[in-house]
Image (cartoon, rainbow, N blue to C red; front, side, top):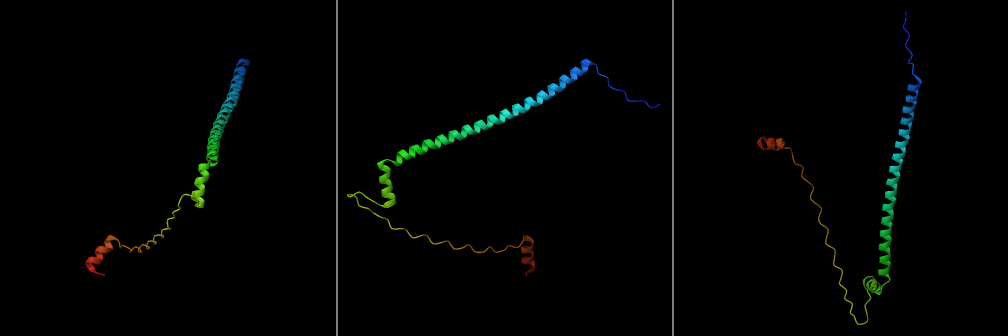
Length: 127
C-alpha cells in the first residue's frame, strides 16, 4: 500500500501566529524601504546645502570683486596696464620685447642597442 503524504494541520492559533509573522515581515520590508529612502533624501539635502554654500561664497566673492572694480584705483590700474596711459606729470618707460629663445635642436635618434649576448658574440667572434 502506498503511503500518502501527511497533511500539515495547523491549529487556528498557529495560523494566527503565521499570519502575524508574515505581517511583521511585510511591515519590516516596508520600514526598511522607507529608511533607505529617507537616508537617500537626507544625502540629497546635504548635497544641495553644500551647493547653496558654494553659490553663496561665489556670490560674496563676486560682490567683493564688483566693489573693487568700481573703485578709482582699479580704473587707474587698468588704464596703466592695458592702455599704457600715464598721468600728465609721469614719464612712460617701455621695455623692448626680448627676442624669443631659439628652439632647442631635436634630440639625436636613439642608436639601437643589441642584447648583451649579441654584444659578447660580436666581441669574441667579430661580425
